[in-house]
Length: 91
Image (cartoon, rainbow, N blue to C red):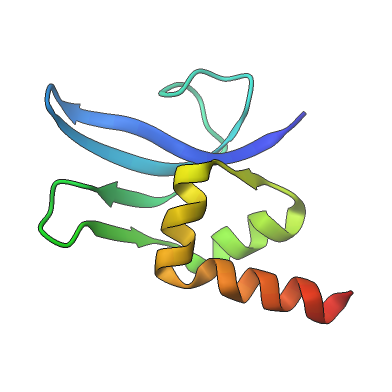
């Protein structure tokens, strides 16, 4: 079972709001998920991004693979740098 950190779409037509979720890659995009990590709203002036950093780091350390878009959001929030520094410190 491969676990991904990805976006699940919500909101109305032409007004998307996304949830950052941890899900099995076999499940549909907006289907069942393991844990909700936060939300991402690209329609805000300076896009709204809030999520549980500690839980995201925990899932990354367990081996969950983020999608390209989620990886970009993690970099923007500074979580990806924390994950990489911890990973290199352990090696």
